[in-house]
Length: 112
Figure 1 (spheres, rainbow, N blue to C red):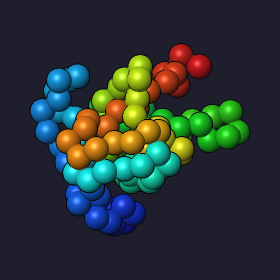
Figure 2 (tube, rainbow, N blue to C red):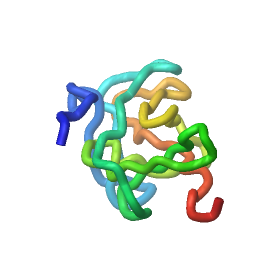
Figure 3 (cartoon, rainbow, N blue to C red):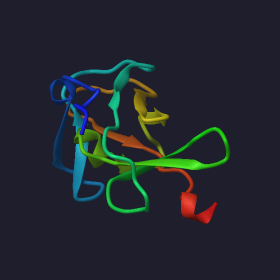
Figure 4 (cartoon, rainbow, N blue to C red):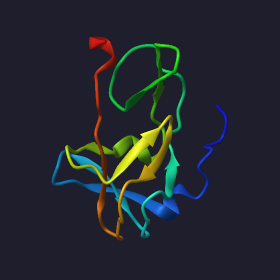
């Protein structure tokens, strides 16, 4: 497997117990709106499962990855502070150290 394309991710985020659900991904440093937090890394997914992120392939289909880095711990929120653009995660608003990083999971590709 290729190395994680988000070197230094552990210097920016960490995993800890979440008040939202189980474990979560938290900011170790501050992020301004638009800052790249990191890239969701892992092997291609062939079916839905735990820690799988599906993104629109811009041709009407879906591409999935089975998360292998700290971003696999991102929890859902209806009021997220981050969003994915493809497999890259960006801050939507200011995130301070200790904040849980969340995104809106959006549509389930199996229901599309």
